Image 1 (tube, rainbow, N blue to C red):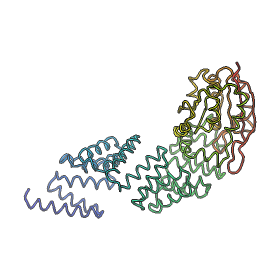
Image 2 (cartoon, one colour):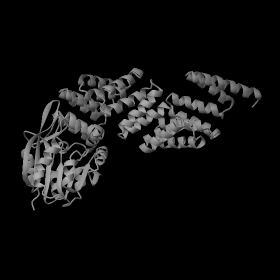
Image 3 (cartoon, helix red, strand yellow):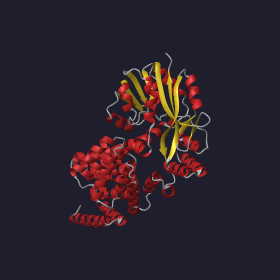
Image 4 (cartoon, rainbow, N blue to C red):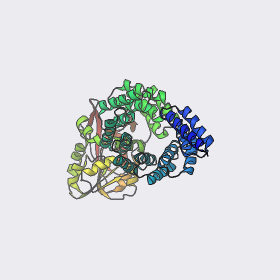
Length: 502
C-alpha cells in the first residue's frame, strides 16, 4: 500500500467518523466501504460498519462484521464490548457475557463493559451477580446514570423497593431527562404504595418518551390502586394500542373492567389475554371471578406468591391501619381456653409476615411458619419469634408431616383456596391426638365455596362443618366476625376451632 493510499484511508475514515457521530449512518457506511475497497481487513471500518448495522437493527450483520474486525485485532476492548451488545440484541446472552468478560480482561477499568455485563447477568437470571457488576461499574464511574438505572430494575425485581427507589433517583440526579430512570422510579414508588408520586413518575417517563407502552401500563397499575379506574382503563388501552400482544396487560385491563362492574367486557379482556399467551390457570380463575367460568378449586400458586411478594413491604401497615385487621386477635381468643399447656408445637399455616406470632409464641415450645412468599417470610423472620420458617405451598409442606403438631392455625389463608377437602385431610394427618385446628374464612351465604370478584374465596359454615365431620374432627367453637373493612364496608368472616379426637 502506497503512502497515498494510507493518506486516503485516513481521510476517508475521518469523514466516515464525522458523519457517524452526527447520526448520518448511510453516508458513514459509504465512506467505511470505500476504506474496505482499498484495505479489506481494515479494523476500524469493519468494526464501525458493525456498529452501524447494530444501530440499524441488524444484529446478525453486526456480529459478522465485528467478529471480522476482531480477527484482525483481537486486543480491542471496545470491539469486544460492542460485539457483546450485538449478541444481546440477537438473544445470544451467554455469548454476550463472554464478550463483556473479554473486554474487561483487556481493560479492567472499562465501566461500560461492567454495566453491560450486569445486563447480561440479569437476563441470565443471576441478579446478585448483576448487582455486583453494576456496582463495579459505579465504582469506576460514579456519574453513570445507566448503571444506576439498571441496578434499580434488578433491585425492584428482588423486592428491595427502597433501594430501587434510591438507585433510580441517583440516575435522575445525574440525568433528569432519563426516561428509563423515571420508569424505574415509578415502579419502586408503586410497590412502596406512594401511588400519586408513582403516577407522576410514569407521567414524566411518557413526557420524555410519548409512545412508551411500559410507562402507560405502569401508570394504569398505579391509577387502579388509587381507585381511579376510568383513568387506569385508558392507560391500559394506550399500552395495548402500542403493544397489543402483551398478555399481562390484557389481564390487568380485565381486572380494571371487573372493578368497574363491566363483567362482560372483563370476560372479553381475559379471553384476549389467554389468546396472547396468558396462563390458562390464571384466566380460569379470572373468568370465574366475573361469572364466566367454572369455579377453580384453588388459585394459582404463582399468582398468590407474586401477590404477596409485592405486598410484603407494606402488608402489616395496610392490614392494621387501613383495613382494621382483627383476625389474629379473634383466633387467639377462640384458642385461648383450650391451650392448657404452655409447651405446644404450633404450626402457623400461611404465616405471611407473622402477624399471629405474638399471640402464639407464649404458648409454643416450637413455633413454625410456612408461606408461599419468600418476601413475606423475610418480614416474618425479622420478628425473631419463629423457630423455623419454610417457603412452600401448604399441601406440599404437610405431605410429610405425621402427628407432628399440637396446633395448626390458618388466618385468612383459605381465601386463596376453594376446595378445602385436601387441606383438612392433610392437617388432620399432621395433628397429634387432641390437636387443635383453628382458622378463618370469608363467609359465603350459600353453596360450598365461591370465588368472589375480589379474587378471594368465601366458604359456607355448612361446608366447613361437613369437611370437619368427614375428616374426623370435632367442632369446638365457631363464630361470625368482621375480618376487616374494605372500601368502608365490613368483610363478613367465620372463625372455627376444631379438635382431632384422642
